Length: 202
Image (cartoon, rainbow, N blue to C red; front, side, top):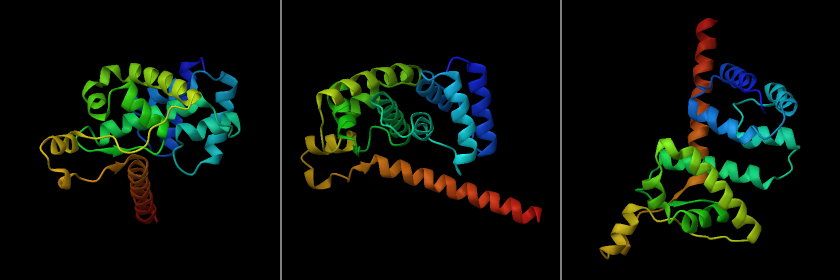
């Protein structure tokens, strides 16, 4: 999408309709994911989104409206990059984590020297560059079949291992489930607020 003004208007409209705060971070992520598509494709996609989704659409859902649900490696990489950024913001480097996508795990382990190093290096001002670098590495690893399983150790786990406290290592946080639970709670709270508004207005 080339028309940034139209994009901003669409995002603001989605925010108003779905009662979602459209932060600069959210706008930048959605813009990076959608800017490669034409204005015509995005205009149709936004209009379709208004009559398709009950809740504020995720990037992958908007992409599916454009592509018809066909999987795209570049799109997948961007969605995973967003997921990693959310995990860094909400969980941080103290806890160990597990990502469902084995390519994402490999990218963090080998491309960014592990979870602790990544969370320590990533600052707000370089999130944009992280997303670009992550996507580039992700696409390369995915094409070459480079994957990794298991958890990504956090500071607590690494420190306990060094001290010999292997029996006192906390469980790793499953990122995908964790983020979904947060979103589900947010949507539940939103529904409760809307219901109360309806009751008070009745």
